[in-house]
Amino acid sequence: MKTLKDLGDLSGKRVLVRADFNVPLDGTKITDDGRIRAALPTLTELHNEGAKVIVMAHLGRPKGQVVPELSLAPVAARLGELMGVNVVLAHDTYGEDAQAKVAAMKDGDVVLLENVRFNPEETSKDEAVRHEYAEKLAKLADVFVSDGFGVVHRAQGSDYDVATILPSAAGLLIQKEVKALSRATESPERPFTVVLGGSKVSDKLGVIKNLLDKADRLVIGGGMLFTFLKAQGYEIGKSLVEEDMIDTVKGYMETAKKNGVELVLPVDVVAADKFAADSPAVSVPADQIPADKMGLDIAEKSQKLFHDKIVDSKTVVWNGPMGVFEFPRFAAGTKAVAQGLVDATKAGAFTIVGGGDSASAVRNLGFKDDEFSHISTGGGASLEFLEGKELPGLKVLD
Ligand SMILES: Nc1ncnc2c1ncn2[C@@H]1O[C@H](COP(=O)(O)OP(=O)(O)O)[C@@H](O)[C@H]1O
Ligand SMILES: O=C(OP(=O)(O)O)[C@H](O)COP(=O)(O)O
Image (cartoon, rainbow, N blue to C red; front, side):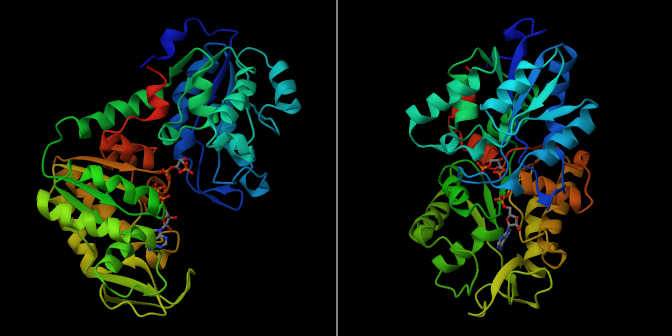
């Protein structure tokens, strides 16, 4: 993989950087700035070198529309505070405003382009459409630095396609992520446990197939657990479910048995009346979720079970909160799993937390970054890396 050094002297050059600033927001308040902090080593190095630093990023999934609530304005402000420089926000990505703001840059200046996903071309499935759009972005700069690890599993315009046009290299965050995650992929110490949760259910159910060849134990919580419960014929009420994946999940359960992979599912869940912070909720056995309720967390017995399975491991990779941790009433499962990783780390295990919301959850629940071996900025990206898949955003940097 090419690195910053391969790009030569960058002083006075216009350097386009793809970062992952997909941070959790409460209105315009950033509730965890971990992804912005993670981008600082590369951005500061470029700034100190006297490069003109033009940063691209996405926020949420605006689906090609301008969604004012998903503007990168709060990110520009926070990045400026953390870097100690004025970060100028362009109000478009390759249009007149971006071009004017880039033209006015002096060496060492930093411009952040507005949310790249406001452009429908960014995520187009049509490669030609994406390429034409990426050429417009590439025109703003001389070289490209890819440092948004959280998006390298997606072939999108501002990441993969720009790298096919400009001289390109991996930034310091991508290098750090690849080094840490490689330790879990190349002969991990066993038992090797993977804990999965979160709400990007279809993406994450997809990774299980390959993990069944690699992990000794798979622990399933969060929004994806209900597809497993339904696959066993249980009532899941109004819980999140991926109906199309039920047969696939049945297949996973058979493969797990055949491969000797221990599949750990919750034995009880917290069932709520509605998706709300103050919703009444009860703990019920996993096979007895009332039809009018939804599962928003794993309950007490499962919390202990998951904690113990994690502590009994030498390598642990965790992606996806166990419940809707943003509501304190449904945060206990995520806390128990985080505590499991902390206790495993203390006992000498190698532990990775991956994903924007998972990292935000552990920090907001009071855990410190150094209580884990590595906090990855990518959830889906780290899982696909672990699967052994070729990630387009990394491959293109070879
Ligand atoms: N049972 C559940 N029902 C609905 N949403 C859930 C459930 N459990 C977890 N979540 C949600 O999953 C979200 C995070 O999922 P995801 O984006 O997949 O994780 P990450 O960003 O760590 O990769 C959180 O906002 C959390 O509220
Ligand atoms: O938040 C992200 O991924 P993650 O939830 O897997 O950690 C990345 O910014 C990628 O976002 P996407 O899953 O909308 O492409």
